[in-house]
Length: 103
Image (cartoon, rainbow, N blue to C red; front, side, top):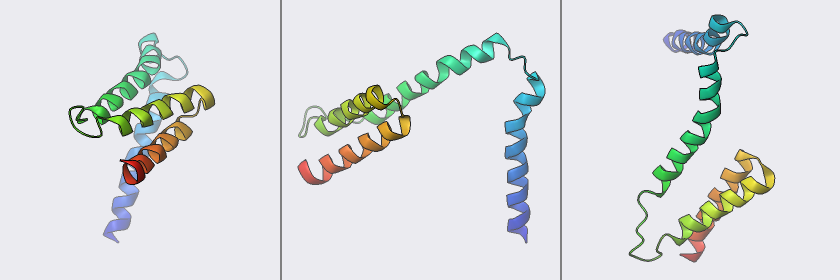
């Protein structure tokens, strides 16, 4: 029973937080919010790329080749398909195949 109450409270809080911007702005979004909506997604993706590549050892085998090849695969798929899910999934598959079967 306690778990059910906990799930209901979490669902209500999540719904409230998602509905709050719509209630506050009522269709007239401020320019700074629109600006943040445009610039934050690429900035966050850039930070994720840096985080994923920060521990590469370029001075020892395999010299970061699996990571580089997977990153090129992600960029290529994104340029071709324009679908983030396909790009990330394809890059992950390429990376896993490379570290499991090649390197």
